[in-house]
Length: 231
Image (cartoon, rainbow, N blue to C red; front, top):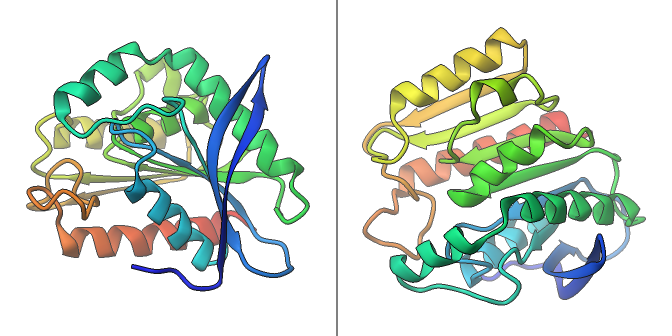
């Protein structure tokens, strides 16, 4: 799929004392747009995630996808598992928060509070970042592992959770419990469980788990969530 009217670039932004590589996609021309952080699955910053960033840009968002593996990618689950295990999650959250600052400093990005969306590992990191970062205006987690009970109350942004009923790593009971905890803390949220959908149902490069109907509906909900809360 080719996205029209989109500009892309590979950049680096400052995070503490080092630089984090990233993929930036933004609408062509002038104008100001909401900013969204795009977080990778355990495979890394692969073409699929870059395509999603371009799709967001085509819909009127400035999308920034940090490369949390700093150039490493995986094609097989065993490789991805090793990369996940080696990831310093505290550093990853710090890099994601630095990405928020980078978007906020861009003249094209308005409002100040930005959105964040992630898939799988990225979905979990989106939720973890939401518990640390006050400058998020909206969160979307695709099959991201729910936060521990003690962390839920620290979230300040509305949360949209998108899960599959056949996800063997995250049970529907865990998703519903997460929704109940968000409700108990009066955090605006929606939890959607797609019947018949597996983990990674949104990834159209993985035919064994891709669920077109669920992916289409989840994408519409994602755009609507950001348009509702990032204004």
